[in-house]
Length: 236
View 1 (tube, helix red, strand yellow):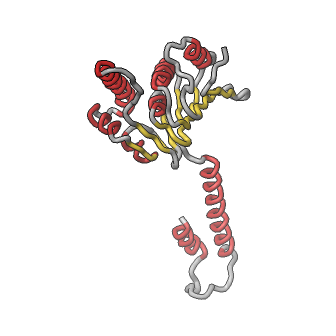
View 2 (cartoon, helix red, strand yellow):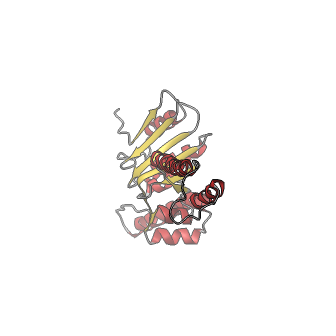
């Protein structure tokens, strides 16, 4: 039986760190009643040890699949860092709540809304569908509340309104813990700035060390060490 996977694992053979990528729709083929697909995901999750990173870029999908993934990740006995680089909407936002730490790119989005379904039948069947959706909503609120510590009433209202959050809003409300930073650029900027300031400082100090006629605007007879102190105060 061919299984259409919506996930993939990457293992760094040098560091042995594992990264899980969730791209696109969660479960194009429903997990409802399917014992093979959830088992395969769990086997792959627990096939190694240590902390893992999960990159999420998904519009959502099957809420049952999302619920099972969430439960498996919560059961995993190591730290999980969720990194949202595009979108974590609907069911994907539920999966993200399993992260020990949830980080979002400055341009990423998170969205939560009420669950929906398709039902056919008489009024009794319609009422069963309504009751089922109400219970599904409560189960989703459980995951959001554990992560955010927000009240169930607030979370329910956000779901009713189909709430979209940028990274800053998600952090403010507790759905995320921080912003994904560009460590390469940050390090490069720090090095350039530190080098630049040090070079200018050393250049200026070197120029006033030799005894020479006082430059324009400087009172003759002021010792070089006093000028050095003043330069240090200005530069630092």
